[in-house]
Length: 98
Image (cartoon, rainbow, N blue to C red; front, side):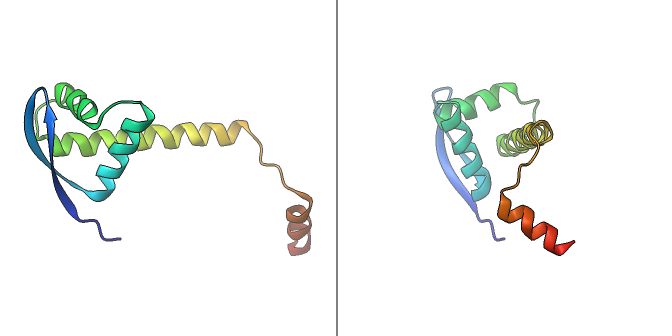
């Protein structure tokens, strides 16, 4: 998978800045903003105010990674609570394999 780094200008805290991120991180960040009904600028501003030093691009990557981990844990817990149900065709196919 090839992921190009894209530099984009964004306004945070009233100042225009450029951020370089791989396309996959931009996409995940945009989707998070949409799910939260926030602007991309406000999400990046929140990340900027909460970071402990380091550069902003790295802080955004860590934020996206953490959100992906949280979603994976939530999905895993949901799958464990809801047993998979098979339709008749799927059950018949499994019976034939055995």
